[in-house]
Length: 525
Image (cartoon, rainbow, N blue to C red; front, top):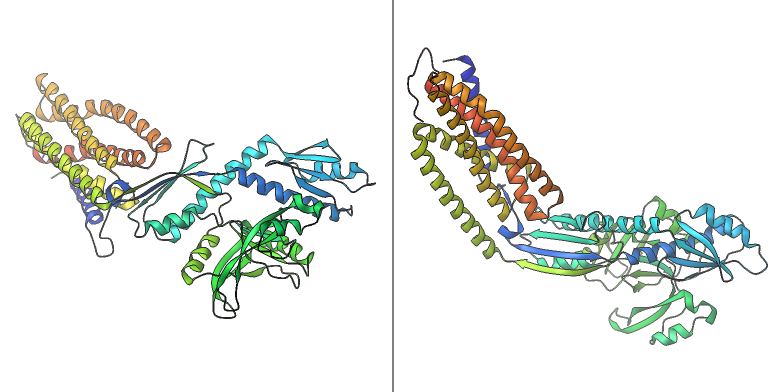
């Protein structure tokens, strides 16, 4: 036998073994191929990011930075007041030249436009800055949700942005979740951690807390609730406190969060700041020793300890947490607080029984379609048809093996992609066979006809598959989860079909007709 034929056979057997290993279930991998939401069951959520909240936070922090910057430049501290979601007013003290503040704003706040208004300056986020912040907010929300889902151990989640580069929606597919209610709650939890200075004592009435603030400061405070507890730590009611609207430090400044024990053994959450957060936290606590610092989580005051000294890095969040609540909250803060809240636009749960029905029906359709193709090909092309069937089976094995190795997720549209791939693989063999028959009718020998048939069909098949590959790439780039699953199976299947149609089929023909000095006069086709 030709030595070149030996290495071709060895290569085919090697591919066969490698693909077979990937699709054989083991104890560590009972499901060699990851199943998508529509096959395994699970939850689909579509959420919208409320980016306006991120703009408001950016303005609040800019107000605080303006005061700090003025102190650094040895200017009297100005008054700041938020005017809207994208702007605030800075008012210099009386009898102080305003030009110094205007220069400070223009030099230190390039993302804002500065204009004179009223007794001071109106400082507004530029359109370009607003767009950048909104895009960054959606991107950060996407990454935060992905971190939270990954920390929970959900297998092969699909988390993607909807609506193009400027879209504000996020699609979340969670196949096979054991506790969908808990996962959805963790995803929805904004966990917007804020550190804000307290401006009043606690009152049982929100209006009383508001009235306790000097009239000149009432536009600069928010009234937020907090739990009142007895000496045993039990919640007995609700209190209200006035806190400043400006938010100098947020959860985005955290480096890590962990569950630990409090003085009475209760669960608390310890946290550490990143380098930038440590600087801001140090300035906040160092400049306000003796005041109360409210630790606000999702617009509720969890605790309001007194600042006894400057704190640069570590702190503790104390609240009435259960152990489970503390673990979940630490996970959420560790994975990053959402930069803005989420609004659930769509929620759909697929049961595993529906997934099993989809698999059964998909497999049934594939088997019936495959059987009909096999019968037709063998009937029409005889021995060559058997060669095509062998190549087709190897094509299917390679396709499933590659999906297992790369961790691709099989979806219901993916099964359709497999069926389409098998049909196109047969189409490649049909083109080759018809070319061989044309060569035979032209009076060429069997060997020359087989060799010419494969060479002449190659260009046509490559052109056909190339256009399909381009379409599949666009589907993968711009499609959602199920559409991407279809594209993945189609791309892998096309590569496998070229290998089997030209390499495997050619080797089988060579084994039958090209061995030794044989000069066959007929070919079964």
